[in-house]
Amino acid sequence: MSKKLLMKGNEAIAEAAIRAGVQGYYGYPITPQSELLEYMSSELPKRGGAFVQAESEVAAINMVYGASGAGARTMTSTSGPGFSLMQEAISYIACAELPCFLVNVMRGGPGLGTIQPSQGDYFQAVKGGGHGDYKMIVLAPNSVQEMADFTYLGFDLADKYRTPTMILTDGALGQMMESVQFPEYNLDEHLVDKPWATTGRENGRKQNVITSLHLQSEQMEQINLKLQKKYREIEKNEVRYETIETEDADFLIVAFGLSSRVCHKALELAREEGLKVGLLRPITLYPYPYDILNKLADQVKGMLVVEMNAGQMLEDVKLAVNGKVSVDFYGRMGGMIPQPDAILSKIRELYSAHTKTKMEV
Amino acid sequence: MNKELIIAGFGGQGVLSMGMTLAYAGMVEDKEVVWMPSYGPEMRGGTANCIVVVSDDRVSSPIINQFDTAIILNQPSMDKFESAVKPGGHILYEANNIMNPSTRDDISTYKIPAVVEANKLNNPKTMNMIILGAFLALNSVVKNESILEALKKVLPERHHHLIPLNEKALLKGAELVGEFV
Image (cartoon, one colour):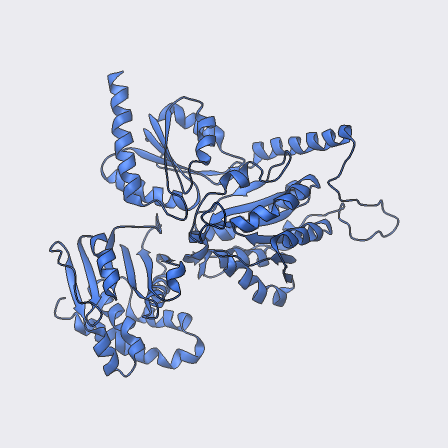
């Protein structure tokens, strides 16, 4: 482990990516992500990688596509408006089964919106913002330490499954400082062979072709079946979540990223009042922790989903719970952050309503 | 120990750097720390604030709306954050910049003539360290030595010769609240 450093979340991602051996970073500046690109511009060239400030987000992601096709560890980072521009190429990359690591530091939308933090890009990240049946592994850190940890993980999972992976985070986690330690990471143990990469034909090896165009439907269906098989594998192996005080909980909060931190505070305050509240924090947003939520639905009398959007992950919670308990929602939008006391009043209100209903039954 | 505070004032008063110095010092002492700046358009002139949490345990939320202490350096911030202090909490405010301090009687309010004292030290920029010194005298969150250690990280090297002056400012701040503690 490195010694403890005080860093912004954006910087922690950049430093972790360099330590994880990123060979090419291609990006275009946008608040609240710019510290990441800035850090890369000054550090990466000194440490053996290529930094390119592209002419647009569309160019940046296509450079990622190219570099990944050539076998490099590669990444880009942006915020919502930039990420929207990248969707076409992300769909191509997923279809061509190339590994890459992406970061979306969310800001308030829709449109150009605001530069304040938001979680409004959940659907875009998790449900496939581009065209066609593809998925990305989506990691949602909630601390500066996890911004670093999940960067290593993002690169490793991308290589393992030959798929784009991403960190979905927000402006507040990007801008705030916490202490962070970088783990030992021996690149040789993590880099995988890429016999499919277009590195130039030598010794008469078979030609490698990277494409997402398959005009024959029979062939394209086979590609889809292969992708779907991979996604089932990912769903089986890579679900990650954290539970806080769920053991004796009869009411559950579900939140990811920054919201989960605020909910943790609200949980502490609720526990002080004797309310048995637990918190489930999905760490992977795809694959989503449906099973544990379904299990917890048998235990608790109600759930509250808290997000910095109009209720996006809410739909996945409802799918998981499948009508077993009532699921309520509290959200702020447009760059506003839910405050602990507002969440606490919502918990109080729902807690008494749900526990009362049960008693009457 | 878990101390949650907000530092608020005009851009340029050293609001963000005061908070960052405190967070660094907490880390030097192996405590859990969070520094959450306001990073909106207000950073470009206008009001600025940051939340700092220093704790012995894992910090739940970097987003807080009830604080143990508010360090207030201008009137708009006093108006905005006066009500965000927990009952029994503290407000430290800069005497020259605030005409209408809090009238709450369930908190302790400390008027710190930091601007006047900083001028006496021949460096108006030490104002924030004087207030920080006062805060640390009232709350033993971190040691002064850790603040000095932190300043080595926060200040660019060309300003390291100012660290002894900052130490004087910290001690002056402690002296100013000496009668209260």
